[in-house]
Each structure stands twice: as C-alpha cells, then as structure tokens.
Length: 200
Image (cartoon, rainbow, N blue to C red; front, top):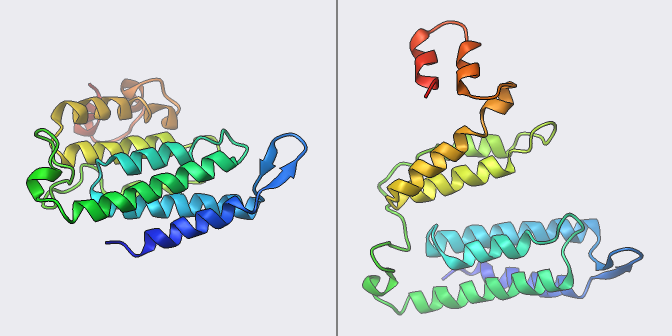
C-alpha cells in the first residue's frame, strides 16, 4: 500500500486551515498554497493510478474535484472534496489487497491495464506536449485525450480507441494554421507518401 497518500491527506487537511478572506471571491488560498494544492492533487492522482490502474473511479474523481475551481483557485469545499477522494482511494487500495484478482474485474474489463502492451502514444511525447508553454495554443485538452487514448488502447477498448484517434485529429491541423489534414498535407514539401498518409 502506498505510504505517500496519508501524507497528501494530511497536507490537504493543513491547507483547509490556511484560507484567507478576499474582497471578491470569499475565502481563498494564497498563490503559493494554490500551487501546493495542485501539486498534491496531481501527485495523489499519479499514485492512485499506479496503485489501482488507469481505469479507476478515484483518479477520475480526483481530476474533477481538483479541476472545479474555474480559474479563481480552489474553495474550501474543493480542498475537502479532494482530500475525501484521496482518502477513499487509500481505503480502496487497502480493500484491494484483500480481494482476489477475479473480484477486481468489472464485467469483462480489467481495472488494471496489460503491462505487456506498448502505449499508443509514447509517454515521452505526451510529456513534451505537456511542457509546451501556453501561448497561442493550450495543449491541456490534447494531452488529456492522448492519456485517455493510451488507457483505452491498454485495455483493448477498440471502439473507444478509434473515436479518440478521430477526436485527436481535429486538434492537430489548427496548430499548423490549417482547417483540416488535407490542407496540412498540401502544404508539405517532399515525400509524396507522407502527404498521402496524412489525407483521410
């Protein structure tokens, strides 16, 4: 069982006591505390995913709980909800250790992905996209689509994989200043087979 999650829970509890009143938004955290909150939520989500597999309710709920602040920073309720999700995930990890592999399965879909399957998109490429500065393009949605594509692929969700690939293709042409892949291909120089592979 992860020894990090109780530390994250305690840190979240400490944040709840550090809210300060603001003129427009009520009780809010300082910028440093908001950054700490985001870091704790991301690290907790990573640990939960590693412990429970990519398709688990707790990592998904944590993403929603930590992302509900609408640009003004988390509220007290956001921090409490995030802490509760991490605690629930920790409880599930404890329960999971007491169950057989057959009990962990949900229908025909395993809660953990196949470890022998390569990701659809290299994790290093997703990391590069995540590191691009937010100037004209915000790649956060593209990064999330790619993460979900890897999850779907790892669990052999063929239809979901195909739909995610199609959704991802809609996010790429605007980066090249084009409306669709045909325009991207028409403006490439060089290899004709590359142009053909880009046009659907």
